[in-house]
Picture 1: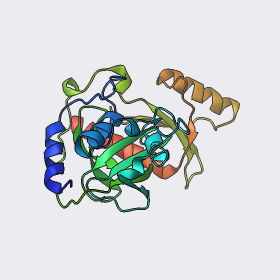
Picture 2: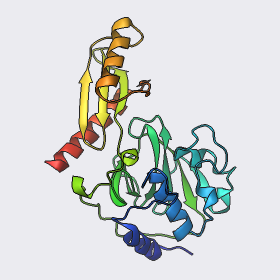
Picture 3: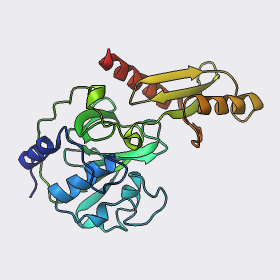
Picture 4: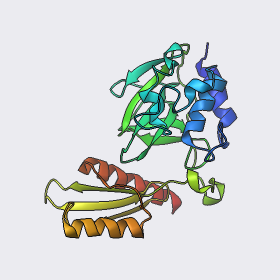
Length: 255
């Protein structure tokens, strides 16, 4: 039976390391989840893979584990909980593909209950395995280990990593995110480019989507900020605000 004591030991054993279970694309967020499931909870390796259940709707991405957890047989070891559930230490949180904070989805191990829209997790990418506060917006649900009893553990947040400490492989670095939204007060259309790893955030109101000016603006932004092949997706003003705050925190930590 896994307990708070054994979870704490596991956290300390992997903190600061780069975990690459499948030896593909470097140390990704999925690798931390797979390592946690197999090495701490005793789950066989194959059911932890993104396409173990089936390859849709987002084959190859972390969120696909949650979408197909039942088909992959993970219910032998986990309860499948919705995003509305209150997570606790030991749960595994999944963010949906296309969410503002994690457009390519994400997965992390919960270490403490949520607070003010943030949740403290053991997470990887960008950077090594670390304890960090992650924004909850975009979470689609949780996997809760069935054989687990936990209480409070040491979840002291990892200090912001220096650039020299971060993994340099291109496939594991954070990508720029593009989105647009309608501002509630002015009804202006805002286009946003953000990078949650570097803290970069740029917003402009030029043009409207689905118009010649707006379409041209999207193309120019995509070229200038390396968004080739990524479709801008409509989202809410609140999500854009979350991105702005998150990026400002990253910049503040680097100052």
